[in-house]
Length: 194
Length: 194
DNA sequence: TAGATAAACGAACATTTGTTAGTTAATTCC
DNA sequence: GGAATTAACTAACAAATGTTCGTTTATCTA
Image (tube, each protein chain N blue to C red):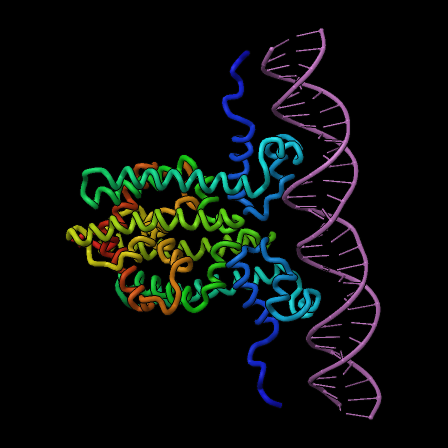
């Protein structure tokens, strides 16, 4: 038997769902829309998934798990806090470029998760933010960073990389590497000349 | 006749709509939900508004008009480019704090505008971004700013202030003024110590 | 090859959606 | 005070929603 289906039908549904959710939003995407994109009838999809909101949950938690595990690895490295922050910024950019639609859904449509999934996701996000903030705080304590409000710095960084999804298209005049370098310059060194 | 209704019923509908759209999204908010919040039946609202998407358009264009007119004023002032950028950052923060729900809707739900409104809004946004980018470019040319990619700087700044909506609550331990000062520090001077 | 499982289908379901129609009560105008 | 306008209501609409049902077709297993 030839190995033609490298990707499961379920994964195909999740991938197409991420694209549609990103473009039209969760509520704006009907199961019939999605089925049309996948190439089957809406009813047939229920052989592979349990419900519409299970699709959403699958996408969101895959991304949040990824972020949290990566944060753990980066925190544990033996480098300066500046380097850790840079690594995190690079992680965000890389994930956005490589897994754009899913990241976008995890950023915007998570609020349509039904309880108790909603609470779990919020907690996961908080865990990530806490870990990120701890690095900034330690960097300030070590004298590496300016004594700026930690929450403000955290969200400024998080949102700066989040915007990429709405703007960056692979194959723009800017490579992913240049994108990283420029964002890091602005965030870590500032726009104004010293 | 006593002057009790300082605010029109239409404006009340628009205000409540902005809050609901922000929380549940445009598609996630039904006209019956909105009517319940306003305090009348769904059908009654059609005495004050033409259609659901007209509500969305009203909110979005009020905000975009505001931004564009303010950008014009700030551009025309006789100050350094650093000061102009700071003024714009302050404008974003102030609008977000004072008119949060509407700004949030203009940031997220504009994509559900039907044509031709959608095209008009996109153009308005592009106009604003062009004007903002021109200031950054001029600042670089004048030697005030680092020679960073203009688009990256633009979107890093725009998204940094956009994040406030999801995080800042008036009456937090941080005042609006401190918020401004901290964000400007991070964006213009950078996180790292010089 | 026979039987079992997986995966597709069309049809129908109960709700919910935005909106309109027709009507009635309140307010304003002359 | 009568007429006209405004703004509210109930009822209903057609369309779209997520999902289930029973059935058929394809695929794998023994």
